Image (tube, rainbow, N blue to C red; front, side):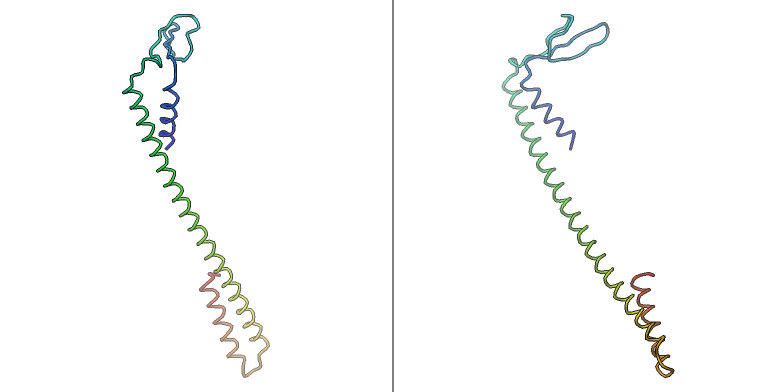
Length: 143
């Protein structure tokens, strides 16, 4: 996407350029939009000599690049919205699980307290209830 954006900007910037100068300094060649410092160089292209066909082609490429850029932006927005919905769903699920685990832990604690204070006749039943509460907590909360 960044290549497309750079290409679009280069097309937009290069159209109004008045001239491109090819400067030589020893064996090194540089290109600039200003005249060469030492006066040695040549003009490669002037803005006035652009043909109507070249300008039209550049406009068409720019329009196509803008359309592609908009398509990519819309796709990115859709992906971001989808990721945000998935994140929110995960957060809701995690919160619900934490609440369930807290409730199960509380039931387990109460069942242990009941088993500790139960009389001789009810002790087996209370101990069994506490054991089941502990198993359910371990199963759902993994602790």
